[in-house]
Image 1: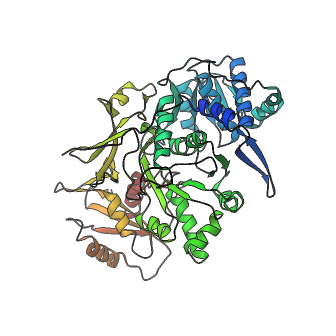
Image 2: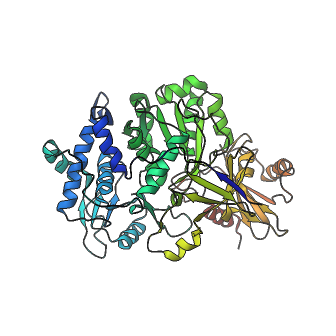
Length: 527
């Protein structure tokens, strides 16, 4: 039986491009601070919306001088910065395709992407980054770009640039590359309409206001931060500050005192662990995060229910969303219930479909999406595009269920589903979260095993001489007997953390099941 969940569009998009919102803010909120850069412990440099707009105009002029025209590509291989944002907005103005690449990707993957998109220009951390590419590319480092901006900005013409380049809402605005954990990264083409409509949909679920201050850590090169932080910041005309790394994040919390923070589960685990060191509860969380956060949001990977419960019990709930790059990325979202939102707070699962998005769950519990956020397709890959989008519906590849109030709960990737010899299908995510409630278990993974059905891998808090894998297996079998018809034959324990460095997680903290399966086989000597 097919479930069809529809969220009705409540308002229209009042601007086509992200640049249009920058221009609007420079007109309507020109003296309001929009960006904060920490110089040292006691001083900052602040940009108003008018300052920001003038600097965007400088970058627009530079790109025009370099004869970079509509729909040509620009690569950006740098960490989040004001210069990153300026390039994004200048591309939006000129209808140039911005191709941000996560600088943490392996060099070979980066070079493959660069060859694939054939950019006219690149913003790079080091100008030698593309020496091995097939043909020369004009490269600038952010500091060099900053020098040009500072030299020209005082004299920049800040009049409207909205007619510089003809563009359509359906023109490609960004090509965002998927993480490529299990396959070659694919370039997702997102249009101006995709970007703007999806950010508005997120704001409908979780409103932001002009007096909000956001502290950002997540990379803008990925759709989660690109839409849910950068684009929503522009549309809400609030202020933004960037933490250069996770080590600096905790220091900046107390200095920046943000009202909004988006993270991935592994970050919220660190915040929770630090709060427990300080006695736990609301006071500890407020002390860590500066005392003003009104909205924690998590995405990028599933967050364990017990971690969410701990934050909610402390009076600072974590709102969760669900999406994928190919959908812009937001598909579903919890609701904050903020004043003006017109709806009650919702923290169930990943919430209902956001505004303008239709979601259906087919007879195999596979989740499909249709709406303005769905990608134009994969860059230079029409076959894979047609495989993923059928009659306007995007195949997410995820398994899901919904309740009577249209709240969606993600059960896992369809590729992760373990099919046993008797035909029974196990969706690992819910079982793993159940096991993680056991004291001493930091994380858990169910991995398929062709000989035994499946194995359970436990990441334990600390070494314990009394831990016996046979006893653990018996204990878990008792726990799982009510939930599964076939019980695990083997339980494997480890205290070695699962990290991006050892390949057992991706940068968002999600488990890499393929590598975990290999790890089990290698440690147990499976053939």
